[in-house]
Length: 112
Length: 113
Image 1 (cartoon, each protein chain N blue to C red):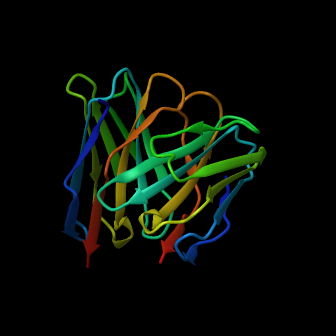
Image 2 (cartoon, chains in turn red, blue; image 1 turned 60 degrees about the vertical axis):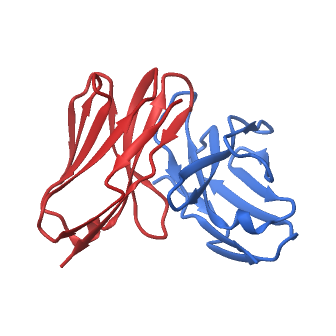
């Protein structure tokens, strides 16, 4: 069964600190992996996409990594800001059409 | 900017009522989706559509139906709302047959009493 597991479920950090969110998947055949950010009461917005051949990709203070061998991805947030408080959702695509498997998300709270 | 607009941000309905959730996108996307989002369960696909008049069941279609009469509009219908359909409903769209970026609406929070 295709699954995407995210950890931790929730995380509280102080403003300015770094953090890393994890995503493990069993989806096969793999096409790509996206990280979405969902602010409270809003729809998710794509942060970054990782394809099979990519190991790391940055989007400002967000850096995503992918290890296709171990089927793991991480999202590293550097110098966190209060606006980073949100849920972060890992979404893995099958290598066919629009078949997506969603992780349960990590709820991040950044405190001043 | 891509805009996906959901007609109602918050709705409160009674058990047995018929509920319509409307979604409109302005980017000429072929694909449209309806998800529900519940704490601890993540996003689950209810229905999706690749083209006008076309619809396909997702993972949890029971108790729901959809309508896509125009390319830009995708409606989710709850024929007889039940309390277990209390949830956040998210509409999304994207282009083409490949797994491109999903563009989400702001969500509709439905409470069924």
